[in-house]
Length: 165
Ligand SMILES: [Zn+2]
Image (cartoon, rainbow, N blue to C red; front, side, top):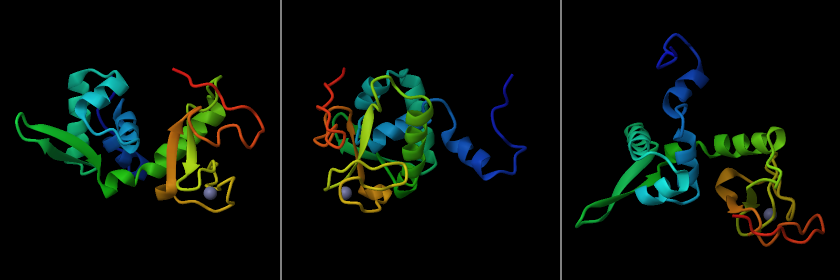
């Protein structure tokens, strides 16, 4: 039986994984990063069991990565937004995606592209914008589903990829 925590580890990664290492947690954070806010949106996007989503959101809220905000009074409805602490995981999510694209690529190419906000250039794993040549920080990166970005395929001279799914 797997232990529930990494209590014997004096390790910064292990301490972080106590908060974000459970199954689904990073994907919840991913969707919040994409701008989803409402429980039903998250549930639809993730295809996750309601009790699991409630558990993950509760934990992330308790840990201060996510803020729960009332957006409707009757009936009461809440939305979930990332705190600064939660947004601090943007580099982790970005590099995890780039690492996955490199070592476990989708045959269709990366499902989402990373773009320099306001510029639209694609941002590589070294945080370099292919269009304006700038070094880009994470708060200047936006993502778009494959095939929807205006710059998709432009640099390679290829036609834009067809929209998928
Ligand atoms: Zn740029």
